[in-house]
Structures are given as structure tokens and as C-alpha cells.
Length: 184
Image (tube, rainbow, N blue to C red; front, side, top):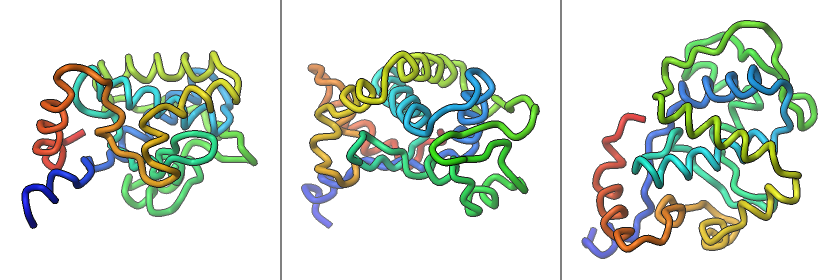
């Protein structure tokens, strides 16, 4: 494969199921039942902010540009209690259930936040606050930025989530090289 073709490949990270599990559980404990749209957009806001501030996302999810905004596919599957993620995490069940579009806690266990760094937690807190401060339509509009538009209802690219700064090309070059080896 030529260097030019390699440079065009999207940046991908290894998804952190443990962080997603902790984040969903924490968000539900913090603010009670959540509609799925608000929860998924909170993850997107947090991941994008963390990527821009710390040069790594929190989750490393695969984002699809959907009609109502970005959807972190693995987190969506986990929220729906897909058995694959139970096996990945080594647990028998999730502490939540999805009823319609509402995610609700099923038990009173405290979330294990050990997988989340302090910067992850800060970004998640701000992402959740940002998401919950908006209506459905406001969240949808806020997530239809250039990164969503560039995906044309396909998979989004982390490169497009980076803010337009003078050093964006250097950040992309760093992430292309480092992302496959990062442990999120």
C-alpha cells in the first residue's frame, strides 16, 4: 500500500468497552432515566471535546452520521444490552434496561469509574450537561457540524472531529501513527 493511500485511511481507535459501560452507568446514576438520544449525544460531545483537548477520545467508538446526529455504534449496542458486550466485559447483565427510547437503571449498584481517567470524567460531566441542557432538536442541530456533514450519513472520521487550528495537520499525523497503539 502506498504512503498516499495509507494517509487517506481513517483514524481508528480500539473501542474501550469498560469506559463505555462505566460512562453509561454513571450518567444514569447522576441524572436518572435518560432518553437514548440525550445519552448518545452526551457521549459524542464528551468524546469530541476530549479528542480536541487531550489528543485521544474517551471511548474510541465508531461514529455513524445518522439522521438525528452522530451515533457511537458500540455504545448504542451496549445501551441495548447486546450480548457481545456482556461477554467482552465479563458480566452477566447490565445494570440498566432500554424501554422504548428510555434507558433506566435496574439496580442500585454504584458505577465502577476506575476505567475512567480524571480528564475522561470531566469531559463526560460537561458532555452530559451540554446534552441535557438542549432539546432534542437543539441537540440534533448542534451535532450536524462539519464532521457529521463530511460523513454523508456514513461513518464519521476522527480527523473531521478535530477543530480547525493551525496545527491540525500535525495532530492528524500524530493520531494516524499513535491511534492503533493507544490504550484508551
